Length: 548
Image 1: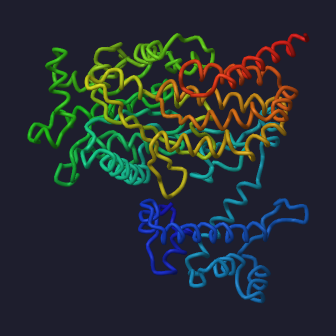
Image 2: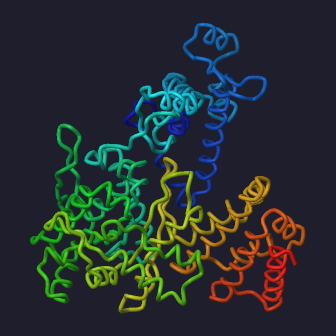
Protein backbone atom coordinates (compact mmCIF):
# COMPACT_ATOMS: atom_id res chain seq x y z
CA UNK A 1 0.00 0.00 0.00
CA UNK A 2 1.87 3.10 -1.19
CA UNK A 3 0.21 5.31 1.44
CA UNK A 4 1.91 3.25 4.19
CA UNK A 5 5.42 4.11 3.02
CA UNK A 6 7.45 1.01 2.04
CA UNK A 7 7.65 -0.07 -1.57
CA UNK A 8 6.06 -3.41 -2.41
CA UNK A 9 8.38 -6.36 -3.00
CA UNK A 10 7.19 -6.88 -6.63
CA UNK A 11 7.93 -3.21 -7.30
CA UNK A 12 11.43 -3.54 -5.82
CA UNK A 13 12.10 -6.63 -7.94
CA UNK A 14 10.83 -4.93 -11.10
CA UNK A 15 12.92 -1.81 -10.49
CA UNK A 16 16.01 -3.97 -9.96
CA UNK A 17 15.79 -5.03 -13.64
CA UNK A 18 14.93 -1.53 -14.85
CA UNK A 19 11.20 -2.10 -15.28
CA UNK A 20 7.97 -0.64 -13.89
CA UNK A 21 5.67 -3.13 -12.11
CA UNK A 22 2.63 -1.39 -13.63
CA UNK A 23 4.02 -1.96 -17.13
CA UNK A 24 4.74 -5.61 -16.33
CA UNK A 25 1.19 -6.10 -14.99
CA UNK A 26 -0.26 -4.43 -18.07
CA UNK A 27 1.78 -6.46 -20.54
CA UNK A 28 1.20 -9.71 -18.68
CA UNK A 29 -2.55 -9.08 -18.64
CA UNK A 30 -2.39 -8.48 -22.39
CA UNK A 31 -0.68 -11.86 -22.88
CA UNK A 32 2.85 -10.67 -23.70
CA UNK A 33 4.74 -13.89 -22.97
CA UNK A 34 8.03 -12.24 -21.99
CA UNK A 35 6.33 -10.27 -19.23
CA UNK A 36 4.08 -13.17 -18.23
CA UNK A 37 7.28 -15.11 -17.53
CA UNK A 38 8.89 -12.14 -15.77
CA UNK A 39 5.83 -11.65 -13.55
CA UNK A 40 5.91 -15.34 -12.62
CA UNK A 41 9.60 -15.07 -11.69
CA UNK A 42 8.88 -11.94 -9.62
CA UNK A 43 6.04 -13.75 -7.81
CA UNK A 44 8.24 -16.77 -7.04
CA UNK A 45 11.08 -14.52 -5.86
CA UNK A 46 8.76 -12.61 -3.53
CA UNK A 47 7.41 -15.85 -2.07
CA UNK A 48 10.93 -17.11 -1.47
CA UNK A 49 11.96 -13.87 0.24
CA UNK A 50 8.93 -13.84 2.56
CA UNK A 51 9.48 -17.55 3.27
CA UNK A 52 13.03 -16.70 4.37
CA UNK A 53 11.63 -14.16 6.85
CA UNK A 54 9.19 -16.69 8.32
CA UNK A 55 11.76 -19.51 8.47
CA UNK A 56 13.99 -17.31 10.64
CA UNK A 57 11.34 -17.56 13.39
CA UNK A 58 10.19 -21.14 12.74
CA UNK A 59 10.98 -23.62 15.52
CA UNK A 60 11.88 -27.32 15.27
CA UNK A 61 8.18 -28.28 15.22
CA UNK A 62 7.57 -26.07 12.19
CA UNK A 63 5.63 -23.47 14.18
CA UNK A 64 6.15 -19.75 14.66
CA UNK A 65 5.63 -19.05 18.35
CA UNK A 66 7.97 -16.08 18.79
CA UNK A 67 9.19 -13.73 16.08
CA UNK A 68 12.92 -13.17 15.83
CA UNK A 69 13.36 -9.41 15.62
CA UNK A 70 15.29 -7.93 12.73
CA UNK A 71 16.55 -5.04 14.83
CA UNK A 72 18.44 -7.24 17.30
CA UNK A 73 22.21 -6.82 17.21
CA UNK A 74 22.67 -10.60 17.18
CA UNK A 75 20.41 -10.89 14.13
CA UNK A 76 22.35 -8.22 12.24
CA UNK A 77 25.67 -9.87 13.22
CA UNK A 78 24.45 -13.28 12.05
CA UNK A 79 23.27 -11.81 8.72
CA UNK A 80 26.64 -10.10 8.22
CA UNK A 81 28.52 -13.38 8.81
CA UNK A 82 26.28 -15.18 6.30
CA UNK A 83 26.58 -12.68 3.48
CA UNK A 84 23.40 -10.70 4.02
CA UNK A 85 19.80 -11.17 5.05
CA UNK A 86 17.89 -14.30 4.11
CA UNK A 87 15.44 -12.43 1.92
CA UNK A 88 18.23 -10.60 0.07
CA UNK A 89 19.86 -13.95 -0.72
CA UNK A 90 16.48 -15.42 -1.70
CA UNK A 91 15.88 -12.57 -4.15
CA UNK A 92 19.38 -13.01 -5.60
CA UNK A 93 18.91 -16.78 -5.99
CA UNK A 94 15.62 -16.17 -7.81
CA UNK A 95 17.32 -13.92 -10.36
CA UNK A 96 17.08 -10.46 -8.79
CA UNK A 97 20.54 -9.84 -7.25
CA UNK A 98 20.23 -6.07 -7.70
CA UNK A 99 17.10 -5.79 -5.53
CA UNK A 100 17.76 -2.83 -3.22
CA UNK A 101 18.51 -3.80 0.38
CA UNK A 102 17.72 -0.22 1.41
CA UNK A 103 14.22 -0.49 -0.09
CA UNK A 104 13.66 -3.97 1.35
CA UNK A 105 14.68 -3.10 4.92
CA UNK A 106 11.60 -0.99 5.85
CA UNK A 107 9.34 -3.42 3.99
CA UNK A 108 10.59 -6.44 5.92
CA UNK A 109 10.33 -4.53 9.18
CA UNK A 110 6.65 -4.06 8.31
CA UNK A 111 6.32 -7.74 7.35
CA UNK A 112 7.86 -8.65 10.70
CA UNK A 113 5.15 -6.56 12.37
CA UNK A 114 2.52 -8.43 10.32
CA UNK A 115 3.98 -11.77 11.39
CA UNK A 116 3.87 -10.69 15.04
CA UNK A 117 0.21 -9.77 14.54
CA UNK A 118 -0.54 -13.23 13.15
CA UNK A 119 1.25 -15.00 16.00
CA UNK A 120 -0.28 -12.87 18.78
CA UNK A 121 -3.56 -14.80 19.06
CA UNK A 122 -5.54 -13.55 22.07
CA UNK A 123 -9.05 -14.88 21.48
CA UNK A 124 -9.30 -17.11 24.56
CA UNK A 125 -7.51 -14.56 26.74
CA UNK A 126 -9.87 -11.77 25.65
CA UNK A 127 -12.90 -14.04 26.15
CA UNK A 128 -11.86 -14.79 29.73
CA UNK A 129 -11.28 -11.10 30.44
CA UNK A 130 -14.65 -10.19 28.93
CA UNK A 131 -16.41 -12.78 31.10
CA UNK A 132 -14.57 -11.28 34.07
CA UNK A 133 -15.93 -7.82 33.18
CA UNK A 134 -12.56 -6.40 32.20
CA UNK A 135 -11.70 -3.93 29.44
CA UNK A 136 -11.17 -5.40 25.96
CA UNK A 137 -8.95 -3.40 23.62
CA UNK A 138 -10.98 -2.17 20.62
CA UNK A 139 -9.76 -2.71 17.07
CA UNK A 140 -10.95 -2.71 13.48
CA UNK A 141 -12.50 -5.67 11.72
CA UNK A 142 -12.08 -6.59 8.08
CA UNK A 143 -9.64 -8.39 5.83
CA UNK A 144 -6.22 -8.93 7.51
CA UNK A 145 -4.50 -8.97 4.10
CA UNK A 146 -5.72 -5.47 3.32
CA UNK A 147 -5.29 -4.20 6.87
CA UNK A 148 -2.92 -6.12 9.21
CA UNK A 149 -4.14 -3.92 12.10
CA UNK A 150 -7.18 -6.22 12.13
CA UNK A 151 -4.86 -8.69 13.91
CA UNK A 152 -4.32 -9.98 16.51
CA UNK A 153 -7.72 -11.53 17.04
CA UNK A 154 -9.45 -11.13 20.38
CA UNK A 155 -10.17 -7.40 20.12
CA UNK A 156 -13.44 -5.61 20.75
CA UNK A 157 -14.09 -5.36 17.02
CA UNK A 158 -15.56 -2.33 15.29
CA UNK A 159 -15.97 -1.51 11.60
CA UNK A 160 -15.34 2.07 10.50
CA UNK A 161 -16.82 5.55 10.40
CA UNK A 162 -19.41 5.27 7.61
CA UNK A 163 -18.85 8.89 6.64
CA UNK A 164 -15.14 8.29 6.00
CA UNK A 165 -15.58 6.19 2.85
CA UNK A 166 -14.53 6.06 0.13
CA UNK A 167 -10.98 6.82 1.27
CA UNK A 168 -8.44 8.28 -1.16
CA UNK A 169 -6.69 4.91 -1.38
CA UNK A 170 -10.03 3.29 -2.28
CA UNK A 171 -10.63 5.94 -4.96
CA UNK A 172 -7.19 5.31 -6.49
CA UNK A 173 -7.79 1.54 -6.59
CA UNK A 174 -11.29 2.08 -7.98
CA UNK A 175 -10.00 4.23 -10.85
CA UNK A 176 -7.64 1.45 -11.92
CA UNK A 177 -10.47 -1.12 -11.92
CA UNK A 178 -12.83 1.20 -13.82
CA UNK A 179 -10.20 1.90 -16.47
CA UNK A 180 -9.63 -1.82 -16.94
CA UNK A 181 -13.38 -2.54 -16.98
CA UNK A 182 -14.01 0.04 -19.69
CA UNK A 183 -10.99 -1.16 -21.67
CA UNK A 184 -12.28 -4.76 -21.55
CA UNK A 185 -15.85 -3.80 -22.44
CA UNK A 186 -14.72 -1.72 -25.41
CA UNK A 187 -12.46 -4.53 -26.60
CA UNK A 188 -15.42 -6.93 -26.50
CA UNK A 189 -17.81 -4.46 -28.15
CA UNK A 190 -15.97 -3.18 -31.24
CA UNK A 191 -14.58 -0.15 -29.41
CA UNK A 192 -18.00 1.13 -28.28
CA UNK A 193 -18.38 2.47 -24.74
CA UNK A 194 -20.98 0.78 -22.53
CA UNK A 195 -23.84 3.18 -21.79
CA UNK A 196 -25.02 1.61 -18.51
CA UNK A 197 -23.36 -0.71 -15.99
CA UNK A 198 -25.35 -2.51 -13.27
CA UNK A 199 -23.53 -2.68 -9.91
CA UNK A 200 -24.10 -4.71 -6.77
CA UNK A 201 -22.86 -3.09 -3.55
CA UNK A 202 -22.20 -5.20 -0.43
CA UNK A 203 -21.94 -3.85 3.10
CA UNK A 204 -19.13 -6.02 4.48
CA UNK A 205 -17.09 -5.77 1.25
CA UNK A 206 -17.15 -1.98 1.42
CA UNK A 207 -16.04 -2.16 5.03
CA UNK A 208 -13.07 -4.36 4.07
CA UNK A 209 -12.06 -2.20 1.10
CA UNK A 210 -12.97 1.17 2.63
CA UNK A 211 -15.43 1.88 -0.16
CA UNK A 212 -13.71 0.69 -3.34
CA UNK A 213 -16.89 -0.43 -5.13
CA UNK A 214 -18.63 2.75 -3.99
CA UNK A 215 -15.81 4.76 -5.58
CA UNK A 216 -16.08 2.68 -8.77
CA UNK A 217 -19.68 3.80 -9.23
CA UNK A 218 -18.70 7.44 -8.78
CA UNK A 219 -15.79 7.06 -11.17
CA UNK A 220 -18.00 5.66 -13.94
CA UNK A 221 -20.45 8.55 -13.55
CA UNK A 222 -17.57 11.02 -13.52
CA UNK A 223 -17.94 12.38 -10.00
CA UNK A 224 -15.16 12.91 -7.47
CA UNK A 225 -15.79 12.50 -3.68
CA UNK A 226 -14.42 15.47 -1.69
CA UNK A 227 -13.48 14.80 1.96
CA UNK A 228 -13.53 17.59 4.55
CA UNK A 229 -10.70 18.39 6.96
CA UNK A 230 -11.74 15.46 9.20
CA UNK A 231 -11.82 12.99 6.32
CA UNK A 232 -15.61 12.79 6.14
CA UNK A 233 -17.00 12.48 2.61
CA UNK A 234 -20.07 14.69 2.37
CA UNK A 235 -19.38 16.65 -0.82
CA UNK A 236 -19.10 15.73 -4.48
CA UNK A 237 -17.44 17.37 -7.46
CA UNK A 238 -18.43 16.82 -11.07
CA UNK A 239 -15.32 15.96 -13.09
CA UNK A 240 -15.30 17.92 -16.38
CA UNK A 241 -15.74 15.68 -19.43
CA UNK A 242 -12.50 17.09 -20.85
CA UNK A 243 -10.62 15.83 -17.77
CA UNK A 244 -12.56 12.56 -17.71
CA UNK A 245 -11.56 11.80 -21.31
CA UNK A 246 -14.60 9.61 -21.99
CA UNK A 247 -18.42 9.73 -21.70
CA UNK A 248 -20.16 9.66 -18.36
CA UNK A 249 -21.42 6.09 -18.04
CA UNK A 250 -24.83 5.49 -16.49
CA UNK A 251 -25.23 3.06 -13.58
CA UNK A 252 -27.92 1.03 -11.87
CA UNK A 253 -26.92 0.27 -8.28
CA UNK A 254 -28.46 -2.58 -6.30
CA UNK A 255 -27.50 -2.35 -2.62
CA UNK A 256 -27.60 -5.25 -0.20
CA UNK A 257 -29.75 -4.91 2.90
CA UNK A 258 -26.66 -4.62 5.09
CA UNK A 259 -25.25 -1.84 2.87
CA UNK A 260 -28.58 -0.02 3.16
CA UNK A 261 -28.46 -0.29 6.97
CA UNK A 262 -24.82 0.73 7.38
CA UNK A 263 -24.24 3.21 4.59
CA UNK A 264 -27.40 5.26 4.10
CA UNK A 265 -25.19 8.38 3.82
CA UNK A 266 -23.28 6.76 0.95
CA UNK A 267 -26.55 5.88 -0.81
CA UNK A 268 -27.33 9.58 -0.52
CA UNK A 269 -23.95 10.39 -2.11
CA UNK A 270 -24.57 7.98 -4.99
CA UNK A 271 -28.02 9.40 -5.69
CA UNK A 272 -26.66 12.95 -5.61
CA UNK A 273 -23.78 11.93 -7.91
CA UNK A 274 -26.14 10.54 -10.55
CA UNK A 275 -28.43 13.57 -10.32
CA UNK A 276 -25.46 15.94 -10.69
CA UNK A 277 -24.47 14.17 -13.90
CA UNK A 278 -28.07 14.09 -15.17
CA UNK A 279 -28.46 17.85 -14.64
CA UNK A 280 -25.25 18.77 -16.46
CA UNK A 281 -26.99 20.67 -19.27
CA UNK A 282 -23.96 21.93 -21.17
CA UNK A 283 -22.70 18.48 -22.15
CA UNK A 284 -23.51 16.67 -25.38
CA UNK A 285 -25.68 13.59 -24.82
CA UNK A 286 -23.11 11.45 -26.63
CA UNK A 287 -20.73 12.28 -23.77
CA UNK A 288 -23.26 11.99 -20.95
CA UNK A 289 -25.22 8.74 -20.98
CA UNK A 290 -26.63 9.51 -17.53
CA UNK A 291 -28.45 12.60 -18.82
CA UNK A 292 -29.37 10.87 -22.07
CA UNK A 293 -31.15 8.02 -20.27
CA UNK A 294 -32.71 10.26 -17.61
CA UNK A 295 -34.30 12.41 -20.32
CA UNK A 296 -35.65 9.30 -22.07
CA UNK A 297 -37.07 7.92 -18.82
CA UNK A 298 -38.58 11.26 -17.82
CA UNK A 299 -40.55 11.21 -21.06
CA UNK A 300 -41.39 7.51 -20.83
CA UNK A 301 -42.59 7.57 -17.21
CA UNK A 302 -43.89 11.14 -17.03
CA UNK A 303 -41.45 12.22 -14.32
CA UNK A 304 -39.18 15.16 -13.61
CA UNK A 305 -35.56 14.82 -14.68
CA UNK A 306 -34.37 14.42 -11.08
CA UNK A 307 -36.86 11.67 -10.30
CA UNK A 308 -36.08 9.95 -13.61
CA UNK A 309 -32.40 9.89 -12.62
CA UNK A 310 -33.14 7.47 -9.75
CA UNK A 311 -30.49 4.77 -9.91
CA UNK A 312 -30.02 3.46 -6.35
CA UNK A 313 -32.19 0.51 -5.29
CA UNK A 314 -32.36 -1.97 -2.43
CA UNK A 315 -34.79 -4.01 -0.35
CA UNK A 316 -37.61 -2.54 1.69
CA UNK A 317 -36.60 -1.47 5.20
CA UNK A 318 -36.05 -4.55 7.37
CA UNK A 319 -35.86 -6.85 4.34
CA UNK A 320 -32.71 -8.57 3.10
CA UNK A 321 -31.69 -10.43 -0.07
CA UNK A 322 -33.61 -11.12 -3.25
CA UNK A 323 -34.21 -14.65 -1.89
CA UNK A 324 -33.35 -15.98 -5.34
CA UNK A 325 -30.58 -18.08 -3.81
CA UNK A 326 -32.98 -19.45 -1.20
CA UNK A 327 -35.45 -20.52 -3.89
CA UNK A 328 -32.65 -22.21 -5.85
CA UNK A 329 -31.29 -24.00 -2.78
CA UNK A 330 -34.76 -25.30 -1.93
CA UNK A 331 -35.56 -26.19 -5.54
CA UNK A 332 -38.90 -24.46 -5.14
CA UNK A 333 -39.04 -22.52 -8.41
CA UNK A 334 -40.88 -23.29 -11.59
CA UNK A 335 -38.79 -21.39 -14.14
CA UNK A 336 -36.36 -18.49 -14.47
CA UNK A 337 -39.13 -15.92 -14.90
CA UNK A 338 -40.19 -16.62 -11.30
CA UNK A 339 -36.67 -15.87 -10.06
CA UNK A 340 -36.45 -12.72 -12.15
CA UNK A 341 -39.80 -11.40 -10.92
CA UNK A 342 -38.73 -12.14 -7.35
CA UNK A 343 -35.53 -10.15 -7.87
CA UNK A 344 -37.40 -7.16 -9.32
CA UNK A 345 -40.06 -7.17 -6.60
CA UNK A 346 -37.72 -7.49 -3.63
CA UNK A 347 -34.94 -5.22 -4.93
CA UNK A 348 -37.17 -2.59 -6.55
CA UNK A 349 -37.26 -0.10 -3.66
CA UNK A 350 -35.75 3.20 -4.75
CA UNK A 351 -33.62 5.57 -2.69
CA UNK A 352 -34.14 9.27 -3.36
CA UNK A 353 -31.95 11.89 -1.68
CA UNK A 354 -34.78 14.39 -2.16
CA UNK A 355 -37.02 12.26 0.07
CA UNK A 356 -34.80 11.31 3.04
CA UNK A 357 -35.90 8.42 5.19
CA UNK A 358 -38.09 6.86 2.52
CA UNK A 359 -37.59 3.74 0.41
CA UNK A 360 -40.49 3.59 -2.04
CA UNK A 361 -41.22 0.56 -4.21
CA UNK A 362 -40.69 1.67 -7.81
CA UNK A 363 -40.49 -1.53 -9.84
CA UNK A 364 -41.35 0.28 -13.10
CA UNK A 365 -38.46 2.70 -12.56
CA UNK A 366 -36.17 -0.23 -11.70
CA UNK A 367 -37.17 -2.06 -14.89
CA UNK A 368 -36.79 1.08 -16.99
CA UNK A 369 -33.24 1.56 -15.71
CA UNK A 370 -32.25 -2.11 -16.01
CA UNK A 371 -33.43 -2.51 -19.60
CA UNK A 372 -30.68 -0.09 -20.71
CA UNK A 373 -27.89 -2.06 -18.98
CA UNK A 374 -25.01 -3.19 -21.22
CA UNK A 375 -22.95 -4.88 -18.51
CA UNK A 376 -23.55 -6.41 -15.08
CA UNK A 377 -20.63 -6.09 -12.68
CA UNK A 378 -19.55 -7.34 -9.25
CA UNK A 379 -16.34 -7.28 -7.21
CA UNK A 380 -14.38 -10.07 -5.57
CA UNK A 381 -12.19 -8.34 -3.01
CA UNK A 382 -11.20 -11.05 -0.53
CA UNK A 383 -9.30 -14.32 -0.85
CA UNK A 384 -11.68 -15.80 1.72
CA UNK A 385 -14.86 -15.86 -0.41
CA UNK A 386 -15.41 -16.45 -4.11
CA UNK A 387 -18.38 -16.87 -6.44
CA UNK A 388 -19.43 -20.36 -5.35
CA UNK A 389 -18.52 -20.17 -1.66
CA UNK A 390 -21.87 -18.53 -0.91
CA UNK A 391 -25.16 -17.98 -2.74
CA UNK A 392 -25.19 -14.19 -2.23
CA UNK A 393 -23.33 -13.29 -5.42
CA UNK A 394 -25.67 -15.20 -7.74
CA UNK A 395 -28.67 -14.13 -5.67
CA UNK A 396 -27.99 -10.50 -6.62
CA UNK A 397 -26.85 -11.09 -10.20
CA UNK A 398 -29.29 -9.39 -12.64
CA UNK A 399 -27.80 -10.73 -15.91
CA UNK A 400 -30.84 -12.71 -17.07
CA UNK A 401 -33.18 -10.10 -15.57
CA UNK A 402 -31.61 -7.50 -17.87
CA UNK A 403 -31.70 -9.89 -20.85
CA UNK A 404 -35.44 -10.34 -20.32
CA UNK A 405 -36.07 -6.59 -20.09
CA UNK A 406 -33.97 -5.34 -23.01
CA UNK A 407 -36.08 -4.54 -26.05
CA UNK A 408 -33.37 -5.76 -28.45
CA UNK A 409 -33.19 -9.18 -26.77
CA UNK A 410 -29.44 -8.77 -26.32
CA UNK A 411 -27.84 -10.41 -23.30
CA UNK A 412 -25.64 -7.98 -21.35
CA UNK A 413 -21.96 -8.63 -20.84
CA UNK A 414 -21.12 -9.83 -17.33
CA UNK A 415 -17.85 -8.84 -15.68
CA UNK A 416 -16.16 -9.61 -12.36
CA UNK A 417 -13.31 -7.58 -10.86
CA UNK A 418 -10.77 -9.53 -8.81
CA UNK A 419 -9.07 -7.06 -6.48
CA UNK A 420 -7.56 -9.64 -4.13
CA UNK A 421 -4.05 -8.73 -5.34
CA UNK A 422 -2.26 -5.53 -6.28
CA UNK A 423 -2.72 -6.44 -9.95
CA UNK A 424 -6.50 -6.04 -10.14
CA UNK A 425 -8.05 -8.19 -12.86
CA UNK A 426 -11.29 -7.70 -14.76
CA UNK A 427 -12.57 -10.96 -16.22
CA UNK A 428 -15.83 -12.02 -17.77
CA UNK A 429 -18.21 -13.91 -15.49
CA UNK A 430 -17.74 -17.07 -17.57
CA UNK A 431 -13.95 -16.81 -17.23
CA UNK A 432 -14.27 -16.29 -13.48
CA UNK A 433 -16.61 -19.26 -13.16
CA UNK A 434 -14.11 -21.46 -15.01
CA UNK A 435 -11.31 -20.27 -12.74
CA UNK A 436 -13.43 -20.73 -9.62
CA UNK A 437 -14.51 -24.25 -10.63
CA UNK A 438 -11.00 -25.41 -11.48
CA UNK A 439 -9.53 -24.08 -8.24
CA UNK A 440 -12.31 -25.31 -5.94
CA UNK A 441 -14.99 -27.81 -7.03
CA UNK A 442 -12.86 -29.69 -9.59
CA UNK A 443 -9.55 -29.37 -7.72
CA UNK A 444 -8.37 -32.62 -6.00
CA UNK A 445 -6.65 -30.61 -3.28
CA UNK A 446 -9.97 -28.97 -2.45
CA UNK A 447 -12.36 -31.91 -2.52
CA UNK A 448 -9.90 -34.33 -0.89
CA UNK A 449 -9.35 -31.81 1.88
CA UNK A 450 -13.09 -31.46 2.32
CA UNK A 451 -13.64 -35.21 2.42
CA UNK A 452 -10.83 -35.65 4.93
CA UNK A 453 -12.71 -33.31 7.27
CA UNK A 454 -15.67 -35.70 7.28
CA UNK A 455 -19.42 -35.11 7.32
CA UNK A 456 -19.35 -31.33 6.94
CA UNK A 457 -16.76 -31.50 4.16
CA UNK A 458 -19.03 -33.64 1.99
CA UNK A 459 -21.85 -31.17 2.63
CA UNK A 460 -19.56 -28.30 1.57
CA UNK A 461 -18.88 -29.96 -1.80
CA UNK A 462 -22.61 -30.40 -2.38
CA UNK A 463 -23.31 -26.78 -1.45
CA UNK A 464 -20.72 -25.58 -3.95
CA UNK A 465 -22.38 -27.59 -6.71
CA UNK A 466 -25.76 -26.11 -5.76
CA UNK A 467 -24.35 -22.57 -5.82
CA UNK A 468 -22.94 -23.32 -9.30
CA UNK A 469 -26.48 -24.20 -10.36
CA UNK A 470 -27.49 -20.78 -9.02
CA UNK A 471 -25.16 -19.08 -11.50
CA UNK A 472 -26.62 -21.13 -14.36
CA UNK A 473 -30.09 -19.96 -13.35
CA UNK A 474 -29.28 -16.26 -12.95
CA UNK A 475 -26.63 -15.74 -15.64
CA UNK A 476 -26.26 -18.77 -17.89
CA UNK A 477 -22.47 -18.35 -17.72
CA UNK A 478 -21.50 -21.84 -16.47
CA UNK A 479 -19.81 -24.03 -19.09
CA UNK A 480 -21.06 -27.56 -19.68
CA UNK A 481 -17.65 -29.01 -18.81
CA UNK A 482 -18.02 -27.87 -15.18
CA UNK A 483 -20.95 -30.20 -14.61
CA UNK A 484 -19.48 -32.92 -16.85
CA UNK A 485 -16.14 -32.94 -15.00
CA UNK A 486 -17.88 -32.82 -11.61
CA UNK A 487 -19.98 -35.79 -12.71
CA UNK A 488 -16.82 -37.69 -13.70
CA UNK A 489 -15.24 -36.98 -10.31
CA UNK A 490 -18.14 -37.55 -7.93
CA UNK A 491 -20.56 -39.84 -9.81
CA UNK A 492 -18.71 -41.95 -12.40
CA UNK A 493 -15.94 -42.89 -9.94
CA UNK A 494 -17.38 -45.79 -7.94
CA UNK A 495 -14.85 -45.46 -5.11
CA UNK A 496 -15.64 -41.74 -4.75
CA UNK A 497 -19.37 -42.47 -4.73
CA UNK A 498 -18.92 -44.93 -1.90
CA UNK A 499 -16.79 -42.47 0.09
CA UNK A 500 -19.44 -39.77 -0.22
CA UNK A 501 -22.22 -42.19 0.64
CA UNK A 502 -20.39 -43.41 3.73
CA UNK A 503 -19.27 -39.94 4.82
CA UNK A 504 -22.60 -38.13 4.45
CA UNK A 505 -25.45 -39.95 2.69
CA UNK A 506 -27.77 -36.95 2.96
CA UNK A 507 -25.24 -34.66 1.24
CA UNK A 508 -24.61 -37.24 -1.47
CA UNK A 509 -28.35 -37.59 -2.10
CA UNK A 510 -28.58 -33.80 -2.45
CA UNK A 511 -25.61 -33.83 -4.84
CA UNK A 512 -27.24 -36.48 -7.03
CA UNK A 513 -30.49 -34.52 -6.91
CA UNK A 514 -28.65 -31.37 -7.97
CA UNK A 515 -27.12 -33.14 -10.97
CA UNK A 516 -30.59 -34.36 -11.98
CA UNK A 517 -32.02 -30.84 -11.56
CA UNK A 518 -29.20 -29.24 -13.58
CA UNK A 519 -29.85 -31.68 -16.43
CA UNK A 520 -33.62 -31.36 -16.14
CA UNK A 521 -33.51 -27.57 -16.36
CA UNK A 522 -31.33 -27.70 -19.47
CA UNK A 523 -28.11 -26.32 -17.96
CA UNK A 524 -26.13 -29.53 -18.57
CA UNK A 525 -26.09 -31.73 -21.65
CA UNK A 526 -25.48 -35.35 -20.71
CA UNK A 527 -26.51 -38.75 -22.06
CA UNK A 528 -29.50 -40.86 -21.03
CA UNK A 529 -27.25 -43.55 -19.60
CA UNK A 530 -25.85 -41.06 -17.12
CA UNK A 531 -29.34 -39.82 -16.19
CA UNK A 532 -30.37 -43.42 -15.46
CA UNK A 533 -27.28 -43.89 -13.28
CA UNK A 534 -28.13 -40.74 -11.33
CA UNK A 535 -31.72 -41.89 -10.82
CA UNK A 536 -30.51 -45.28 -9.55
CA UNK A 537 -28.06 -43.59 -7.19
CA UNK A 538 -30.77 -41.29 -5.87
CA UNK A 539 -32.96 -44.31 -5.06
CA UNK A 540 -29.97 -46.05 -3.43
CA UNK A 541 -29.30 -42.99 -1.26
CA UNK A 542 -32.95 -42.90 -0.16
CA UNK A 543 -32.77 -46.57 0.79
CA UNK A 544 -29.49 -46.08 2.68
CA UNK A 545 -30.88 -43.11 4.63
CA UNK A 546 -34.11 -44.92 5.48
CA UNK A 547 -32.22 -48.08 6.48
CA UNK A 548 -33.75 -50.29 3.79
